[in-house]
Image (cartoon, rainbow, N blue to C red; front, side, top):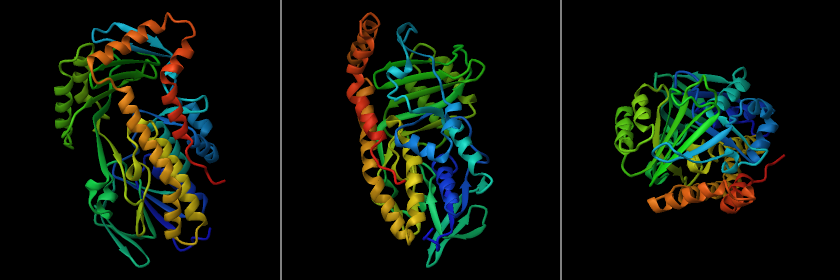
Length: 402
């Protein structure tokens, strides 16, 4: 390790990017502290994909088998209409944009795996957050919300789309966030539909509803997506009012889903956005994962970018003579990978969400007819083939150092 003057790294965020970086930094001899505003490791969350080069990173970490053991396995997907009638049933992998090597896992399960791999070698500070950051000649002075002041050599913002560190260190926060015109909410609900490794999808113009369950004895997860603007309240009660207003006239099981929403222990709501950072670093602070280059949930690549970004950043810090050189190399090597995956997010939103009743009618007509067609798989690939190629290209759009 040549970068011997930057031994103690503070990482803000204990979800995916932060612990993944901590794993590699520990291997390279750095001392690592992770600060997390949540009182404990956040469990649950929605499904995330590990694709392409991110699978290679997981293999190099020695955790790919652990991830596969926790992989989500959905047996059947159904698309229904607003009356609950089944339009089509299919293997989820037909439209899941995954190759055989790719892995789907719950975010919380992946986070737990990364935590277990790092907890004995990394200082975790839960129920903590950063109040101020002051860069000094030989390090970063950080004041926590509880008044404690500590010094570190480097600071990594791995605290997600709404990064606190990014707001504290980088000027003009509005220059970073690009709203894509949709909002998304994810929360647990009782398994009233008695699903068992199944998912159900419903579309109306500009809206998507998905309910899935990985085990019949576990709660289900509901995802509600809708188009809209200016719904940026951070108050949970207000967010739930916004959802109710947008879905109150939908049919099927939406009334029951909305009724269960206030009691959910893991309610999440946010704009579907991308982060476009003019620079990935400023002084001794560097952005990682969604904090620096969120591609939006639509891309399905946020987790992969976080894991790959952690690997690239750690490798550069380990081999470069200075943190400045490491940050510059990290930014350069990640730039094209980031660009391609963010473009993918825009493409998926444009092509996979029906905007009109006519578009939904034509989509449903095709799906109904598809089950009677010979050579079904070839027809499916003709339907999604170009998008699949873009997903595969984006998932592998970087060459990893050995």
